[in-house]
Length: 208
Ligand code: GTP
Ligand code: MG
Image (cartoon, rainbow, N blue to C red; front, side, top):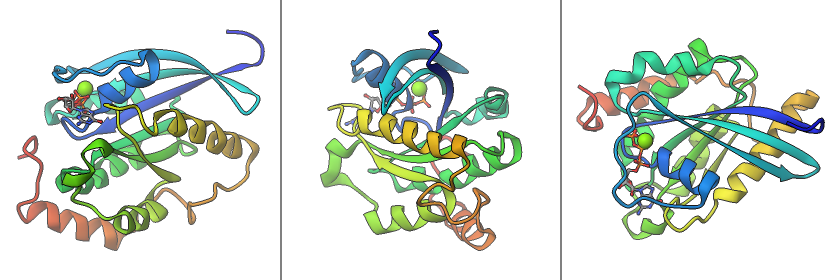
């Protein structure tokens, strides 16, 4: 690592099949797997990325969405600078699933972690189950920002990591990030409403 570059540990979180591994593949190696295998425990990938006068050595931990690995996921939070919580825009249940990932971050991650919500599979926009307003309103209170991407056609991926560099710079300089109200703490009311919807039959297939 040269003198001007900085190491940025990123953790990829989100329910089964939302496309975490493919986002990492697309960003680090510019490829996409139509038939990717579910991740077991985690994968590690890295990439050097220069933007806005900064060179970032992204160290990406791609975790498993499967519930049975979830108790181990927090092990990857140590010294993490960025958490990307991925959901699939064609599966509303994966958007509701975000609340439990945020709770896990609140309980275990460094307090200055940058949290971004990432809506994946924008190439399937005709099957979209979520409105942009709904996503934006939730992100405003619970994350630093949100991005819409497609690991399949690559759109939004570079922009996502550019935004990470900028927002991370602001946190490191002590400037309050733009879209975040006060803290990453989830609003209790919103959390319980989403949990109720989850219990009322919209739970992803992974979760009992
Ligand atoms: P787990 O490792 O099981 O937690 O899943 P994951 O979140 O890593 O999902 P993965 O990247 O393995 O992708 C799951 C499926 O979605 C695969 O069939 C991918 O080809 C598909 N997929 C991923 N990203 C996209 C995308 O942007 N568009 C489309 N159309 N399919 C995608
Ligand atoms: Mg995976």
